[in-house]
Length: 335
Image 1 (cartoon, rainbow, N blue to C red):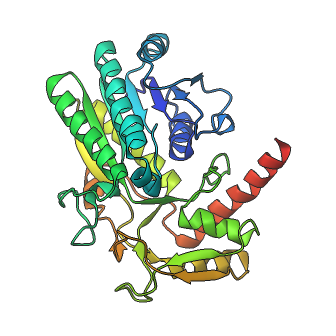
Image 2 (cartoon, helix red, strand yellow; image 1 turned 90 degrees about the vertical axis):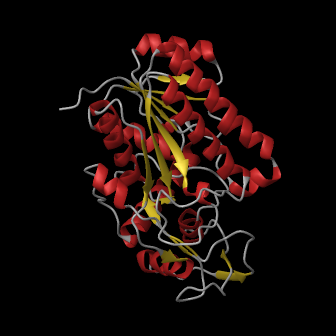
Image 3 (cartoon, rainbow, N blue to C red; image 1 turned 180 degrees about the vertical axis):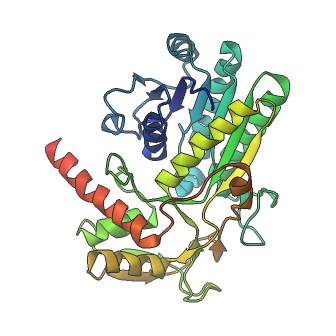
């Protein structure tokens, strides 16, 4: 049985990070969080989890946290994630995602923290020529967000080769949904994720949902994506950490997805089914750089880890997102 060492989660007040905190806590891992609350929410971190408000670029703060908590592993979620913004403001993304990751790695090496899980992305593949996408597909990002994450993957590989550190980079596909117990979810105002946008529309918070492109080479003409439930993703992080501890001479890079996709219209139809409503759809032109289909090949993660998705049903995923959106409305109403 793997010894459950103290873990620090960076960006643990954000969407995916907060679910990783819940997964670690539910499994009995000692966990602490650092988040500067730029895009995260203090309410997303349970009261019994030690919380440090600060930035991962603050080497002195990191050194203090590592010493206080006896940290042996870091799950790194802190960063900026909006693709169009990365095109408009590339230096912000290279600062937040690449430069600050380098400073975090420096702090890990100085403190002798031996394990790191990195929140990477399918955006490192760019527009892949083949779908489903394996981890060996060419990495050809088409935006600064993808490049900023790929650069961090390279830094991890080089640092692990030079120091007593092993890592796992998990490349996410389209993350969606919320904690089944509605303890956390996607809370960012103005979010661009389709399922988040769709449930907001179903609750009357948006007048319609924009459908970007209806002429793709897909069954219904709209883009197809591989949606993964955020709680299944969080579970993969915990299993990846166990794998790093069990084999400290091994590094891992793995896709996180279900290996099947749903079109934009199929997602909107699922929201209609779950809510028994009809969302207004605004058909529009394609966005630059959007591939027809982007689906993961999850063979490696399933062969490497005992990871078996629990929530890989579209209606379930939508139901959890909807329940969180309703709760979030109450939270904001009480604020």
